[in-house]
Amino acid sequence: MNIRPRINRWTQARRSMLFGNAPLHALVQPHFVVAGENIDTPIESMPGINQQSIDVLIETVQNDYDNGIRAVMLFGVVEHSEKDDAASKASDVDSHLHRAVQELKSIHGDSIVVMTDVCLCTATNHGHCGLVHEGEILNDSSVERLCEIAVSHAEVGADYVCASDMMDGRVIAIRSALEAAGFTSTGILSYSVKYASTFYGPFRQAADSSPEFGDRSTHQMDISSGYDEAILESELDVKEGADIVMVKPALAYLDVVRKVADSINRPVAVYNVSGEYAMVMNATKDDNSRRRMVREIMTAFNRAGADVIVSYHAREIAEKGWLD
Ligand code: PBG
Image (tube, rainbow, N blue to C red; front, side, top):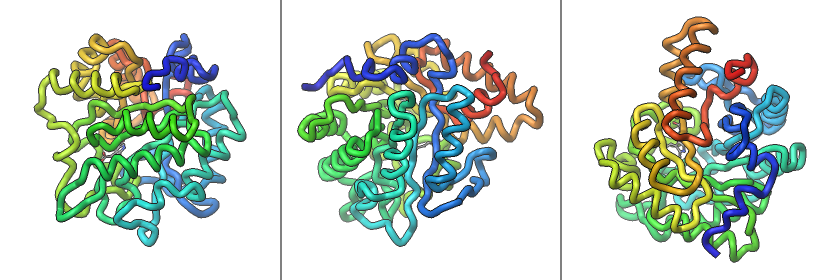
């Protein structure tokens, strides 16, 4: 089965993220998980965001939870010595990322939504989002790896596997792989409309995922491409079985968010990416100016039609009651 509308209704936390009335519950806080213990390393280009080992992550998520955040997106940061050309670590159920998912779900159960990034770039030694052969990023064999990664995340309890790679046909392939493995309530959030943007710069430092050669322009969308391409990509993903469709980056593409929200019949998410976050953090020197700017940005996302907002600002918004 391709489309399972019940997936988005499966838990209380999913329903309140997608259909609820509490603006805080529609926010998703991203986290960068590293191996080891007691690690809490600030990411220079993203003030307030740290790379954390599982023990510290658990405390951070608990703190955010107490302030009203109910959804997280996890990125696994892989050590250099563990990277290879097949991104093996990305589907290793014993990895720190997988253990983090397992622990968070065992602590919070269905009162939290755990999303995981499904891509190869953090675990490949060349930093590309797919398998590479003679300098080219392969499509279909990369999709096979993405399926294995997605199933491994489902095995440890992820609510949504989030395909951020932009390979063709990956949503239907992941849906079939999940079905075949018996994971009929695991959702797929697809980065359907993802541009080859310079706004991802700080993230690549945080996740150690910069490509060693070339760029992402053979799979991510051209920044000048028109609405037709954005609608094609999102309609394809909906037909293939995506439960949530995402547009990324957010701020420079709000017109695209509106077009997509008007054209498809699934919830729409936006990713308020690292470069957008860094801009705001650099432009605001005190709480009050940041509160006003962040509120204005969140209002714009809602107006453009976003149901879910992935944002590094989520924590501060919740902590300081900025949406109250
Ligand atoms: C992995 C991925 C990226 C981001 C999310 N998932 C980076 C990229 O495509 O290079 C960017 C997130 C951000 O900038 O905050 N493919």
